[in-house]
Structure formats: structure tokens, C-alpha cells
Image (cartoon, rainbow, N blue to C red; front, top):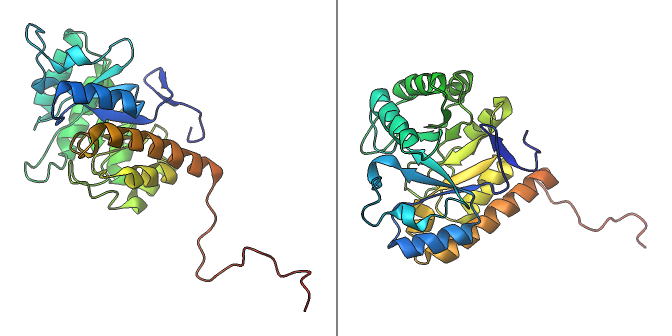
Length: 258
């Protein structure tokens, strides 16, 4: 799976491994340009923050649904019951059967409530949803979510919106070693090098919002993130050299004159 040419889950196939959000942009036009520059095929939309009746201007007016796959998310939900309600609402209005499942446990850190997250995953999988749960970087919880039927697992790199990059790449590596579904780093990316590191570890994709939307130039940053994800993926497939404690000459000494 890790060496596949495309990102696959829920019976769908995507060529871009960068997933981008639609919040926090200075305006909808900037968002539209940034989405294009990112090369993303999947964009996330917070269900409770979007105008679904479409009678007034909405961010959905700036997303070409022939070009992008919507991934509704349950951002801002603090219980399994609430998250399931918003997932069902998104499906009812025709957004998608896929859902980025968020169940937050703490308002200050925005860390997930794993107990509620697991319960919501089990419920929505039974109802036919393609569930992509946002979780912490705990390999045990990632395994439980996979066993519950999650189509992918989405461990955080760092707290949402923090821009700290991958705080615990070792845990992400452990998750990758046992995962049978795609692993997509979600949250904490701050700049292009963070995205490249995640992909170099072997992650199947990276999801981000703040790092692009709140950059000084969101469109330019979106382009940088696209290139970083692609470069990181190529580096992973190429296979890095082993790390060593001492120097290793790039030119062999064999055959050189005394």
C-alpha cells in the first residue's frame, strides 16, 4: 500500500496526496486560488460553519465540485452523538458519504476525545459512511480505529493550528508499521518542510488548513506545500541513505596514487 502510485480509500482513488481545508482564509477568492495552487483533489468543509441553504454567498460557491471531492468534517463537535448528527446532515444535503471525523475533548488544546471518537467511528461505519478519524498520535488508538472500520487514520502531527510540525515522528512511524489503511497526518503542519518530513516517513498524505490559509501569501504557500508533498513522497520511494555517526567519503580512496 505504501508504494502505491495513488492514494486510495473508500473505493476512491486520488493522485494528489495533499488534502486542504477551507477555513481561515482572508476571503473566498483567495481560498479559491489557493485550492488551485495546491493541486489538491480533496477539500475539507466544516459542516457546522458552512451555509447549506445556498441562498447567501457561501464558500461552496467557490469550490468546483466537478474538480474537487468534498470531505465534510465534524469540527467543533465534543461528543459522538453531536459528531454523528453533523455527519448525517452533510450526507443528507448531498455533500459526501465521506467524513473527516473530529470529536474534540478539550477546548484549549483541541486534542481528540478518543473514547467518543471510537464510538462515533463504529456508529458511522455501520451506517455506511467512509470514516476518516482525526486522532492523536497513539498507535494503540490508531489500531482500534482501523479495526472499527475506519477507511484511514489521521494522527495529528501537533495541536491544530499550532504550526509546530511533527512533534513525535517516532509514534507516526509505529502507526505506519502496523496500519493496513492509509495514514494521513492531520494538524500541526507549519511550513513546507513539515509536510515533506511526514511524507518522507511514508505517510500516505497530509491534511492542512492553517499553514496555508494563514500564511502571508496563501496562494504561494499552497504551491510550496504541493511541491513539498510531492518531493517528500519521491524521497520516501527513493529510499534515504542510512544515518551514520561519522563521515563517509563521497570519493573512494581505492586505486588512488600514494
